[in-house]
Amino acid sequence: MTSVTTQLPPVVAEHIAAVNAFDTDAIVATFAPDAYVNDNRREIWGTEAIRKFMAKEFVGDQVTMDVREVINHHGDIIVRAKYDGTYDKTNLPDELIMSSHFSIRDGKIVSLAVIFNQPSPY
Image (cartoon, rainbow, N blue to C red; front, side, top):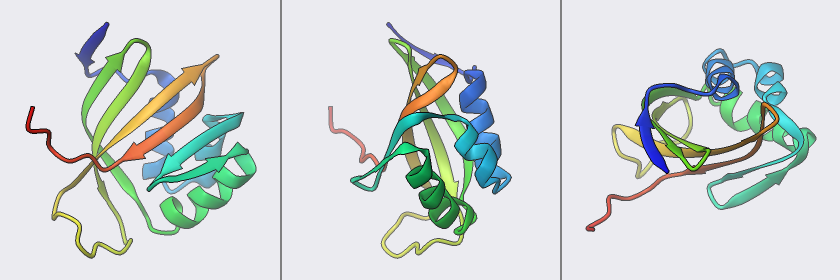
């Protein structure tokens, strides 16, 4: 079942707050030890690699997330958010909206895919 909601699961709310606070330790604490992140077609496995990735590309680039929509799709959470920061914005739209697909087990993020989707003609 799919539902549009404004309710973020606690660990997703913690994750977004940690991203917006540029707090690497708090970001990593939201992930399970064997979690993976897929960002820009790259797979980052385990909290050690996730820590390095988040420290450099989220905290280092001062990425912020402004939540626009939350969708619960059969227990997985899709968060559409406006992303901003000091990263290279070449060829990106003025308002960068990306979808973050969270899978959660036992109160921790086990997978996160961050996707820059294009509008569908369907």
